[in-house]
Image (tube, rainbow, N blue to C red):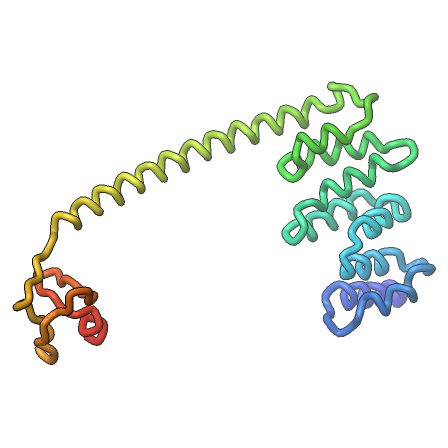
Length: 211
């Protein structure tokens, strides 16, 4: 139990601490039995493929491999593809785990890339659930895209209406027009910026900003 507690503390330190340099520590763990700890160090170094091989080949823990992918996915969306490649690069290819990964995480594995990677002996019966999930996801995304497009068109129409409304509220500035700001009362320059107040008064833009 004491040994387990020490390893747990070491694992937590390696995973969360910022007070060590991974590349300096890695050689000290490479040839030990501390495989999970070494995987965490490799992850810190960005060596995700090597870390996944430890989980799948050395520890044979597919659960930990998937948990690792979930942890890394927000920073590296390709991590599930890497795990799929790891399964398929085994000798022989681990089609069972590859198919299970596809079925459990269809939204995180691009179907074009994933299906191209699968070996020729993979049957459609293996992929039926995955393909069904992908099609459902695509239909959902298509509906969402249509809704977003409709909303964008609606917002565009509202903006055009508002633009026309504002364009009708034109003002005429002559050489005798003066700034409505009581502290200014100066005339407008020909190319000077101005602001129109809701009550129709006109001010130099600089005067308007100072209010």
